[in-house]
Image (tube, rainbow, N blue to C red):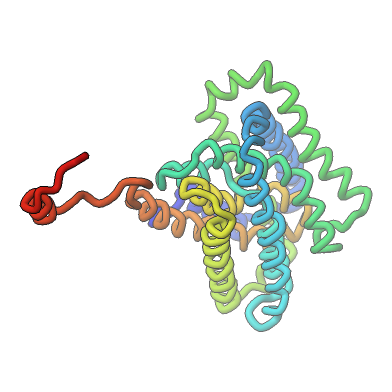
Length: 337
């Protein structure tokens, strides 16, 4: 089961923030740089996302509606149901982070990779992830404001303006400029990918620095972290089962069921971390902790599932007739008509 190297970098960044948190002027500089990094991230998301491919995928609308329902309806409902675990297993801040996790869009890259590995419908996975990212730009902040209330900024005019300026405006700008810069972005995919990840590391450092300065981490104990991991394991298992057997009940084929399972059961770390920074401010460190843990868990579990699905027999292929059976057929004079 794979350990995502990027998770190790994120944990290292958290450790750096714990040992050397940004304070005073340094904190102001880090906060400004983090704000610029978030805007740049969503500009790149807009420049990369092909609206033509997404619109072409509308032909398979039932699949995309199913994935969106899993991502933005079933996941949040399960997150709200977990409210009953406070304070037995979860503290209120950890629960808020868990609930925010259920509101985040689905992934694109890992959904495509696992769908391809399992011999599923890769074009559908691409479109499903793209739709989820598009919808999440608007839906995730609104759901967070409605379900998390004042802890996520509420519906105040200032918070909505901040969301629009830091997330939506850069994304739309990237989409509008894609015609001219799309080729450059595609050619320099690896370099810009490093910029992406470096920006997210900066966001994490700023968020956890603020948490350290305010003493938020004293609220988390090893026992609470163990409880959080257990809750997330159950959440992932439930979503994997619902997406697989639910899509079967809806009469999707094997390839579509694979795409639905991998796109409908996962959450995007790349989208969630910047959104949490905007929505939660100084409390973002605890808000993103459940998402970071869930991200690694989903990669490990889905890698195992994808490898097993890859060994499924091809649809329509029957097992070869045994030699003994063939001889019996010959001995009885069986002939092909």
